[in-house]
Image (cartoon, rainbow, N blue to C red):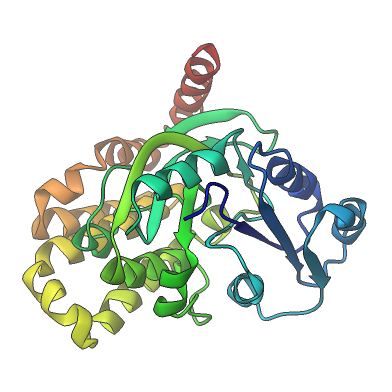
Length: 313
């Protein structure tokens, strides 16, 4: 690896004009000197193309044309990437200052790593932080149990990405998680305890509008991988923990989607299979109970207190 290897960032975009400029600027204002930036717009009908044109002279390439969705748009960009290190940043998320430089330094320290990832803030539609999503060092078994890497805080070695085969376009919600699983089979994952990005949560985001579908894709993902010779043995050896993780993951998004009764049922399944896995979500379990009792407003109070603490820090 040279002192300043080329880093390619891809931003897929569709009708996110409200947030797109903040995303673009968070890439272009990085202090790293060797970034190739590609923007792939899906024929937006809002002001997205106008915003992209405003920065076109600083982009390596951009396009606005119809596609089948996020996975196709990201793959389109990643296949054009020339960088030794690559990543994508969705058009409502942002990088924090110094993120790319820190990621490159981590790849230099870990020359065999396939994916390097950090922590991420949760921000609201106005950009106010209300949570810090801390990761930890994950194994392949952890990923199969739905320990989640926050996607905007992840960077990949392009050679390993190419071996893994890019994003599976039949997935719409867990496309990133499935890719990490395939890459973790080929090369080490490395966690860096630094905050590199901010993931935006707003009313039009998929985590809010399609909550129940996350669990459905998680079940499909594990059932599909169970039939692969590369994964069958590890899934069989960790079956109870992995399926507890599926139910826990399902319950998490059902809670956020305002379906506490279904969420508690899923948490009960997780607890029956692997109690330690279920209890990792003890705060969300309490939230589901409170929501069932009509006390969901307490969640907003809790989020405001967390936001204040993050601001003070």
